[in-house]
Length: 214
Image: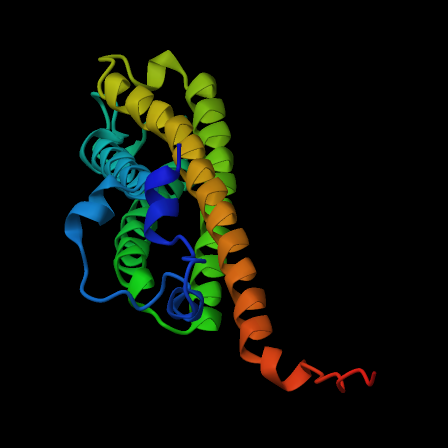
């Protein structure tokens, strides 16, 4: 399932030049290759989910009774629920864009240690986002169940609230998938780092055996 990503970052064992390159610093950015990679699709999906959640809460997440002027959050009139959804959606958008840029630049980074740090940051961020969306989904779903019908007699914004909950649930798996892909990529980069050190220092550790006398 991740063959496209593996092909781009594959280590070429057939020549010393390929071993020293380790699939990094391969030249100009190839947009087609970037689009075909699985983590790009998950990144775009996560960005769209965050946009939907943000739009639903901002546009229809605040309602009021017919006899009220002040608007309250549709999730059990709990302002923290709407603030959490808006915060996660906004930061999720920014995070997707930033790491999409990292994905585009990663194959051009020649230093394996720098690539390892970038992949490790992606792994930690994706895992953290998956957990945060799990918390957000549970909190929004709970507050929606606790909402009272008398607080929203016109049933305004119900579809938007359910959509925000649903896409919060979907985001758990898209970010979780990104974390798994980053873990696989981290394994490859760690192998490249170890192999590069071995290849670089091989000559200093080779012992020349004296010829055997007859």
